Image 1 (cartoon, rainbow, N blue to C red):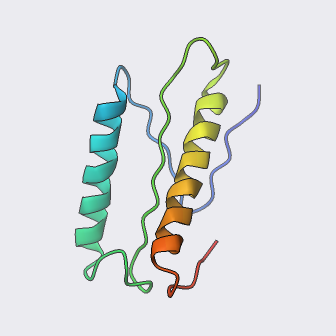
Image 2 (image 1 turned 90 degrees about the vertical axis):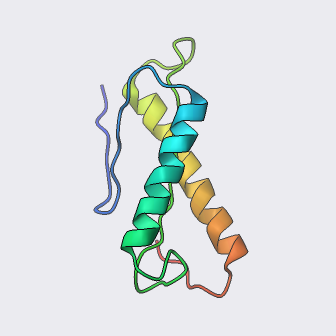
Length: 94
């Protein structure tokens, strides 16, 4: 079995028995909270830019937590990509 690798600024939360709608709401609430804590919001590159991703467990295709994490990680990078497409004037970091 493989192990999950996280960069210094990444983390994962596993929540049982949730739907896509609930996951989207939790992501939106987290993003709003982080935006408020960052002061000027996510468009201030000296503060914080929050990229989020999530994935739901699919018993038909997921053999391990790593499968779910990999989909959530791809979703997070797509979120980051959308951010920089909307805000091309900000220098993309990592």
